[in-house]
Image: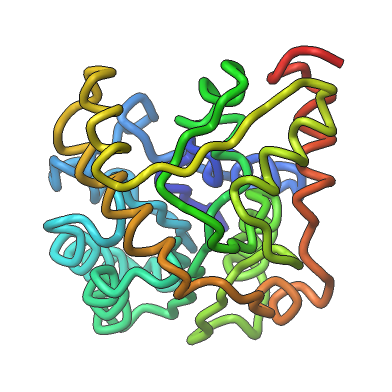
Length: 272
């Protein structure tokens, strides 16, 4: 029983790999540098990676709502089912209406599917594009005072592993959130408390945010993606706590404060 993790070097994927290995289960990491290599843009690489697998975790890059995502997920899911890989667990974005056709493509494939709709991942502050602003002591975003129930990537990975390896998760859609709402200003304050540093949050307009990114030579397509993410998904539609983690695992999700304390202890943000 070998488990495939597509996106196995990303924030959630590498945690899924680690947790599966800790259970003594064989794992194949699907990535461009994997063995065999996997590339979403080259469907000739798909079958070798799927061969011999029993279940797969799918973290699609760049995003489930991206153009062409539904077609690729549908094609890969159909191929997986035809090769005997029926248990498919996919990471989706919570509140992303544009991602619904991609979810449906998975469902229509005939797989034993589980969908993990994740809210904003806490590790974006320590392992992604918000790391540099935290290090600079200034987080500037077009999010205002909207509350977000940040979810820990460890919780996402725990749910993914449960869905891949145990019964009771097929056909389930889990909305994964943390246990409380925080604004991005609240999140900055939690990180400041954990690090002993002064970290400021400033809210700007979407237009100002896009201009700031462009000035920093961020690619135009990524500027468009980030601006849309902050102005649509973070427009208040997700400002509530969901019970996905508890439904899947029988426990409460980890709080952002615990994440901040653990991340600070690694030294990733400096100070304390």
